[in-house]
Image 1 (cartoon, rainbow, N blue to C red):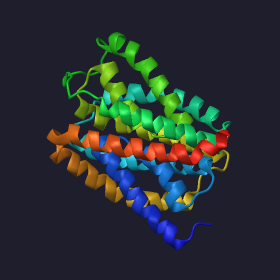
Image 2 (image 1 turned 30 degrees about the vertical axis):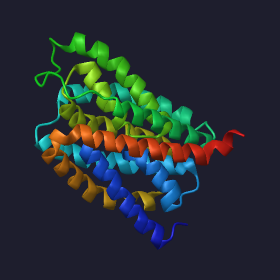
Image 3 (image 1 turned 180 degrees about the vertical axis):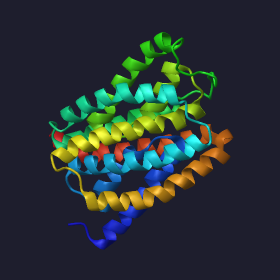
Image 4 (image 1 turned 180 degrees about the horizontal axis):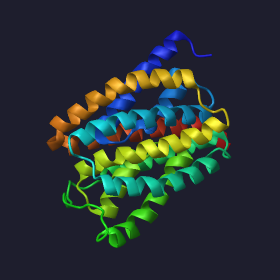
Length: 264
C-alpha cells in the first residue's frame, strides 16, 4: 500500500513526466518507471511499467491537443505511424510480461543509456515542413513508415515506454518532417502505444490505478507548462536536448546498477 507521502511524490513525478512530454515529445516512461520504483515506492517492476504506461498515454493525449492547436501535428503521418506502431506495441508488451521484472528493469536502464546517447547525437533540425500523407505520397511514405513504426512500437511495448524518444527520430527518418513537427506528431503514437501497453498489463492486474491517478494530476499541469516552454524556447531545443540526454544517461546508469543483481 502506498502512503500519502509517496502519493504526493507521485504527483510531483507526474509533473516532471508531463513537462518532459510537453517539452520534447518524449521522456515520459523513461522517467516514470524509475520514479515509480525508486521514489513512489512501487516494488514490482511490471506494475511500475503498466502504471506508467497508462499515465504517460493520457498525459501525451493532453499534450497532443495543445500541439494540435498550434498547428505542429502532421495528422496523416502521425495516424499512419500510430496504427502500425500499435501492432508492434501489442507484440512487445506481450513478450515483456514474460521477462523477469528485475531483469526487465535492468534492460530498461540499458535502453535509457542508448536512448540518451542517441539524443546527444541528434543533428540540428532539418526537413520538409510541407510533407503530408495523401494518395500520391502514400506509396513512398508508407514503405518507410510501416517498418519503422513496427520496430519502434515493439521496443516501446517491450520496455513499457511511451517511446517518444524513439518515435520522434522515427518520424523524422521515415517522413522527412522537421523536428518540431515530429515532436507534436509523436504524441499521438505515444498515446496509442501507451494505451496498448497499459491495456495489456491491466489484463494481468499489473496497473496501480490509484498511483496512476496521482501521476495524471501532476502530469496535466506539467504537460501544459512543458508545451508552453517548448513553444517559446524552440530555438534553444538542441541545448535542451543535450541536457536532457545527460539526465537520461545518468538515470539509466543508476537503474542498470540497481538491477545488475538480477543477472548474478
